[in-house]
Image (cartoon, rainbow, N blue to C red; front, top):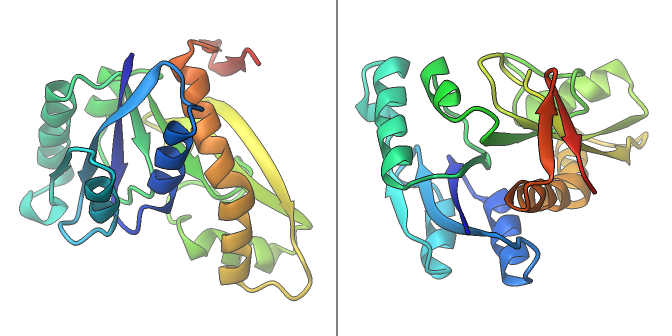
Length: 208
C-alpha cells in the first residue's frame, strides 16, 4: 500500500476529489496518509479532519526563504514515509532538493494543456484569463510529474473542455475543474499506485 501525501494551500477541491475517489475504491494500492498545508487557515485542513486524515501545517510564512521551507518540507515528507506526493492546489514554491529526493514521485495538476499557458506566473484564474485572451477554442488540464522546471515535468494525463463565447475566467475555471481536474488527478494517482506509469526518455508512458 503506497502512502499518498497531499500538499495543499487553499480550499482543497482537488483533495476532496482524491478523498471521494479513494472512498469509491478507485485508488487501489494507495491511501491518503497525510495532508500538509502551507497555510494554517487552508480549508483543505477541514476536509482532512472531517475524513479522518492526519494533517500537518508547514506555514510558509514562518520560514525565511524557499530553501529553508523546502528543507522542512523534505523532512516532513520523509517522516511521513511518502511514496507519492500530490500537489492539490499547493501554491508554494519548493526548491529542486525536494523533487530530486522524490523523482517521478511528485505530481501536480495544472489547469491548461501544457505546454500552453504554463510556467511562472500561470496559476489560478491567470491561466484562464490568458486562454480567453488568446481566443483558444479548447482548453483543459494536465497532470504531470513535478521537476525542477516549473510545469515542465513528464505529462501523465490530459483532458479537454470547449471554450464558449460567453465564458468568463471563473466560469471556465469551474468547467475545467469539474470535467477534467477532479477526474484526471485521481486517475493519475491510481495509475501510479498500480505501477502503471513509466518514465522513459523524459516522457511518461501510461499502461491503461
